[in-house]
Length: 332
Ligand code: HEM
Image (cartoon, rainbow, N blue to C red; front, top):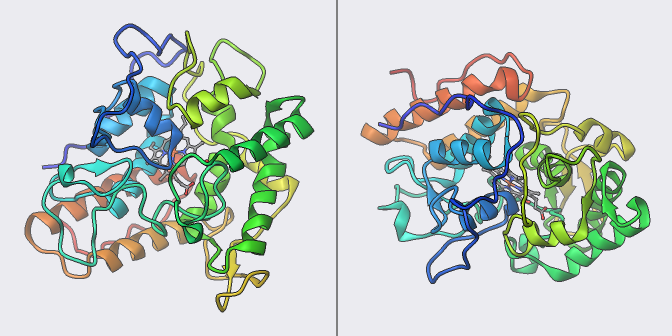
């Protein structure tokens, strides 16, 4: 049985997380890493298994412990990823590509392909990862990181702060509109795209530091080397996506994508969730899961019901939303 997700830890202040029990280690053959610098770093310090494969409850524990991510928000993000990219029978999820370590494959069209699978959780317009259309959607991209540095110099005196986040988020969307004929930025990706723009400020700044700005040496350490800076302390309180309203309001942008396979052909998608319609996001997630698992039976069906229940339980706090619960596979 998949265990229920962990609750919040007892101590939720700042503390040294780059400690003696969690040394950074280089990658070994077969270790999985992917598009998320947060999870990559946790794996490279042993907060989750260093091979990059873990259960969703282990991931929730790790993001709480290593980065002080708020409990309900961590549950929401992790169970979205698990339902879309994990193995629901073995309860294992890869933070990178597909690997036999997550166990026997579920029946297609489900894939248990890990974080790297495009169009479920991973999406376009990332800061330091290229769009899937350009061939590699998950590796650190030096050209894009230079843009992150340039914007930090231009708008943040050499630091990544909320102003930089707002400008870079908008610019990355304009870049994709102009160059990626398959550009899409809606539903889950719309929410995560804005959230991830706030994460470097919320999670990568040392918890003893009260300035909400990230220096470029630390940024490269996380994004490229998957490594806590020396003596790194996690944030001083449980943290989620604080700052997204400010980032969004600098250049409001509605969800949508390029249509008809053409660049510079952006159309708003009025059916997509946006920040005023969180229950549409929930419905879209359930709909994606149903597309992956049209007719589950046995343990698979039971685990889908359980994991969808864990996800639903996080909505009031994670999205601030009271939505009607959906039961595509009935109830236990
Ligand atoms: C990006 C998953 C927690 C920081 C991503 C992406 C995935 C992901 C799939 C790729 C999305 C994309 O850009 O296309 C998760 C899951 C988490 C989690 C399931 C579970 C709680 C965290 C934490 C941090 C973090 C705790 C920070 C400490 C980031 C950042 C990006 C990102 C900054 C954007 C990378 C970029 O645009 O270059 N995450 N993540 N994530 N994640 Fe995570």
